[in-house]
Length: 410
Image (cartoon, rainbow, N blue to C red; front, side):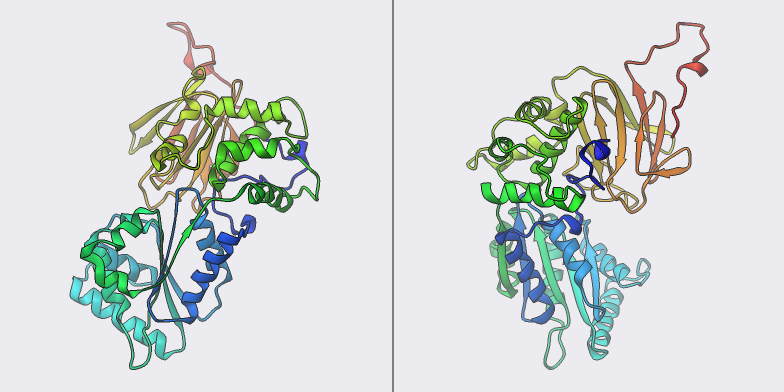
């Protein structure tokens, strides 16, 4: 893509939660400190909330990277579970195979494991992302787990991270006892205008800018105006603006490049008083940034030889992953939270891995980025994505379709 033009080592505005790029605003630094405090204090647990795209998952990944060797971690991202499935999932994270266990056996195994870790001088940390999706019954199980203790200490440390609805759940009458166990609550707000500028420069510096100003000065206030300081929206707009500059063979992003990106994304100005549902509509299905442009292609998502989804492609970006905040959701354990993205320009289309665990494959070869040609099939976990280029000439009736396109060098 544009790395060579901008003289960067890596893409600065990926959507995947990479701790290397974490910008510690005052809000993020405070939230990180609260999370870290969970390791040292055992009296209750910490709840971190924030809007979609505010940086909660990046903070979690940073905490995990920095943990010392005496901390045993279970991390749960799939939260639409029954109570028994929830407990089984925790045990799986700790290395057990509990699927034939009944609930009493699961609880006994978990209790024994926690006490053994404490006796051996190890701390046990449970981190739950997307915790707003936990049912009240599961949250009650969590309350019971938080009460497991020796004669002096509780043996399980807990961090809950989720969208603001999590606070509404914790404040409900049904969960009063759980709410009383919460030691710290913190809401992760958006970046200020000054922090937004610093966030952009920070990510560019990490990517290899070496102090070069890539975004021209007059672009920063406009970026803030359209993103409201939401990190994920910042990444989307900045990356699209850099692609717009790249298409003009420019190594800096000018205001007209940014305006082209805003027009392509079909965004309106972000208002701090805008309700959250409007922000959600800005981010995903049906993706507004592919709403009005010309249809230049299609992707077919298949599983087990059957097509399960078809999506038209217009200039813009589609993010594919396991969670509901993606443009296309694939609910599979083989798919990462944000697995890959399809970037469509007027004259080309590419698919890019977003640092997923299991990667993307073209012709049995794992690739980081691949320029899509008509008929290409990309394997993503146990699913296949077929790309159909609507700009490619189609064979006339009776013509041999095998020559419809020649694969480019992969």
